[in-house]
Amino acid sequence: MTASKNPSEQVFVVGVGMTKFEKPLTKEWDYPDMAREAGSAALDDAGIQYQDVDAVVASYCYGEPTSGQRAVYELGLTGVPVFNTNNNCSSASSALMLARLLVLSGQYNCVLALGFEKMERGLSQRYDDRVSPVKRHMDHMVALGAEPGLVNPHLNTMTSDVIKLFAYAAKEHSDKYGSTFEQCAEIAYKNHKHSTQNPNACLRKEIPLKRICESRMICEPIAFAMSAPTADGSAAAVVCSRHFMESKGMQVKAVEIVAQQMVTDMPSSFERSFLDLAGVEMSRQAALECYRTSGLTPRDIDVLEVHDCFSCNELFMYEAMGLCQLGRGGELIDSAKWVNNKNGGSVCRIGDRWVVNPSGGLESKGHPIGATGLAQCAELVWQLRGEAGKRQVDGASIALQHNFGIGGAAVVTIYKQYKQMLYAKL
Image (tube, rainbow, N blue to C red; front, side, top):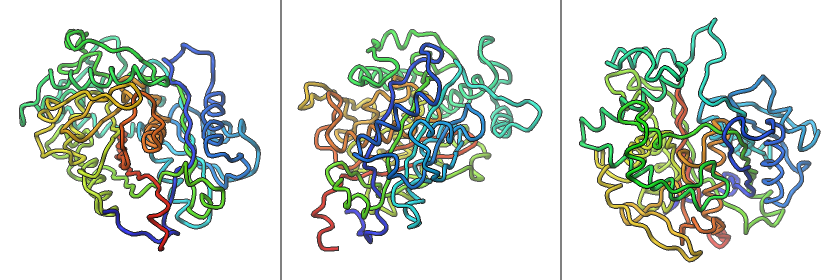
């Protein structure tokens, strides 16, 4: 049962929008174009104008300072404050969290969270004349026993190091708990099949399991078809107070953020575990805090969007989000069953309970890192409204989002359908 809240402590998502995610350099557009499309869609979804927005939080990683300001010029010039966030792959979830906190402060009634990214084909580090924010992580990875150097001569250092970190985490999980390459391939198969029902996904193609297993090995045990592609795109969410929501008659559109937490690197991140260096314990702590503050449990969750930058990380998150005991993530994907929904599509259930990454996840939807967390938010809002089309999880009323950026920030958010009668006596 969700803990009761004072109405002044309630924050809602009332509008979401996103572009289709595209492979980098395949479409002639720039970040203002992306932001205009996603931001306008979110405002239209909420049924408001940009003039109704009190503040903006913009997220991106590949761009100059104040790119957020330039992006929202496409929506209007109203003089409202614009905050820019950069937390690597969790930048957009960080923007959503800051937007929520701005509303909770009481100073702002309506805040637009807007994420966008115009990327290169791989991850890159812009500056070589100062300390890299992830150098300590990558040095520690080698100290733990990872092979130094590039995993592939065609990859740059940043891309190589990120792949290597998750590959060694997957090996550690396999050595400790017996998870297999085939189980991670099954996750990739699930996500690619889900993506065929998502018009916004970058890759919309079911890939046979055998072909996933035989795809080019990038860094054992991570194969090419188990990896999220970089992408260009944008996503946005309109976040507001209960008073604003009710004054605009948005009850039908409203989805409540009932809990949210960010955890950054802890001492355990730099101890003896590749898994914790890759953010597993940070993610677990963020989830535990969300369950504590919301009064919910993992069994209350219907649908999840988790950060599957590689399919092995989704397996780790089954455990970190509390869907199963430590070491049992492989067994959870072994339980997968495809079920038909009322809209003529199908979704994959694990543990006879949860649907994870019905959007196709990062592996298929694509990963414009400054927009990913808000794209996850949009998917879950559509799911809770019953607007997800053929990928709809029937009866979904509570959703969980997990987003992770190395360096580090793990953000977990829990959403709940808004039912006006629940608050009639408050």
